[in-house]
Image (cartoon, rainbow, N blue to C red; front, side, top):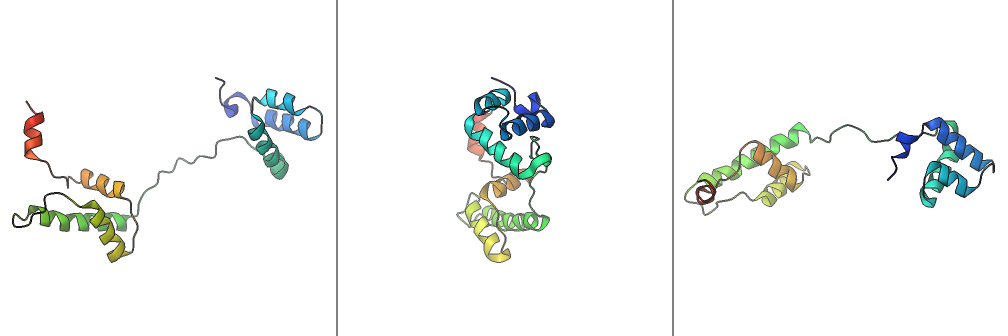
Amino acid sequence: MTAQIHKRLIDEQVRIILDRYVKKGISVLQAMNLLDLKRRQFFEWVKRYKEQGEDFSIKCKRSNEHRRIAESIEENIFKELKLDKALIDDRAMPVRFYNYSFIKDQIEKKYQQEVSLPTIIDRAKKRVFIFQDRKRISMTVR
């Protein structure tokens, strides 16, 4: 398997090949072989080259920014987890486990904020809002 094109060639080399193809200096097959691209991707690059001209680049456009939720959403998740924990800790109530879907619905209703279930579960685990079943612990610990 060949290395990715931005690791094999620099922008200027790719621009020269695409320019020669656009000016009919080389055929499609020659250009595709030089760039080691398949037909569909090659023509997408030709289109981008025609639109961008000398600004054309093959660099990765990924950003290193991590997606984070707002502080207010995180605070609201903890508020709702605390309310649910009070129900779990109350022996008179038959509730034994967190209802993360209910917490998600409450956050949407009360605060008009949207958050995913995996985010709520992750925050519950980070802040130790998890219910540890004593039977399970005794079965797994020797």
